[in-house]
Length: 428
Image: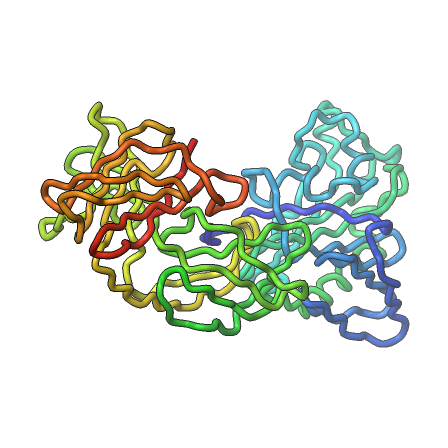
């Protein structure tokens, strides 16, 4: 979920119909445009139109500069497929009308050998028609002169992927700008000037958290901005176990706070013989490793799914929009929760069905009279000959699910000594 290395980016051209605000026209002097997601100086002669979401469209005649500071795409190619980058741009469709999709743009073009470097993160690549590729189904101007039909900007910001495209709004290849024309050179100069002033703001930012230290099960509120990114589902993520099931957080209407509950447990899996799960990977067992709550394999040697308590310590948390755009990370201190009865390991805790044998390891169990509770279902009078282990048949679960939309329940053990901590258990 973290952004690493080179960012793959793609981009979609925007139509004027997407805008729900009035355009801001620049005439004689450059003016600064600012939104919650970016700021940029608009040069004279260009008009900026913010949309209802995070995207911005800047136009000059038929030239369209589109900026999307939060971008998602489905292509493994650098900068995405060209059809994704300029989807809906008439000039691209005109040149590549007969090209089998998906295409990457180079079927009909040649790119500048030396891209124009705008700043450390953004470079300009130009696309021109190339007659040598006439057999590829591309459409070229009658004059035979190379014409420009699209430029791509890609890069990486600290908190998100983003995408920028410069396109031309014309559906006739004979109307496209001629390569190296004064008009085109002037447009490129303007675009470079504007993009050098572009400042992409972190789309999601955590400013503080309250409380910043608490026990498991405590409700915590994170404050900042951008938690309600348009079109994205937001999740609270622990860096050490990003895929651990958690109920959806509660997001304030203004997007400035998000509330969640510190989980009682985390999920783990068994590893092959001689290995143990460390940092999310099955690694060779270290010489100093103490096997207290390692997840055991099933009797047939297949993988097992286990639940273990969330141990006290300092954890990094962040807010993510569908695992694609993340905030900065802040520290949450989980305090100890002493209980006379405690679960240290429960398995299986995933893909469980009624009647499956559930094994629980822990402390404080009694020889008889242990009670297991899953949701609001109860299994009475369970024996524990060693006072460290109990087994019972998984009941039909009842009560409210821990995670709405899924069959995830809290499992605990109680006896005359008291009640234990809880471990999440997921029914198939």
